[in-house]
Length: 131
Image (cartoon, rainbow, N blue to C red):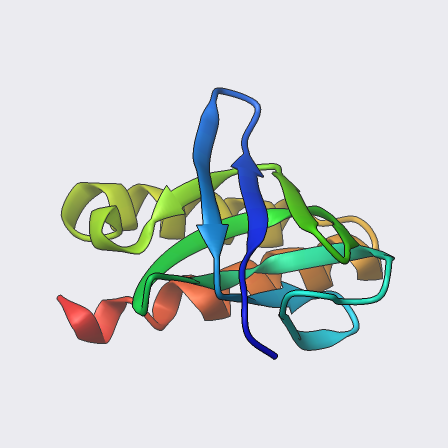
């Protein structure tokens, strides 16, 4: 399907991105999903992981620490608990995020909290090889 849709990525701190997107691949809690123009309306929980935003044929990757996505045929809004550009996940930033995820896993008192922390840790470890 040709065309674009309005994409907005918002974190508690700021508007991370607002653009016309060709497609967005989300790390939804129920599994990976691709959003294209004309997508059926959906509200989806997001797991910690990487979302890929394609605009004008260029891909931008952003790590999100969970959140929600609201999708309709013309728009996708992602409300992320945390959003860090993949290019910034290196060195001390990556080390800090890994420590925070490890601390969250150690402090997790429920299965859900352990799953979220483990998922975040696994996604962040994927950036270690890119150092």
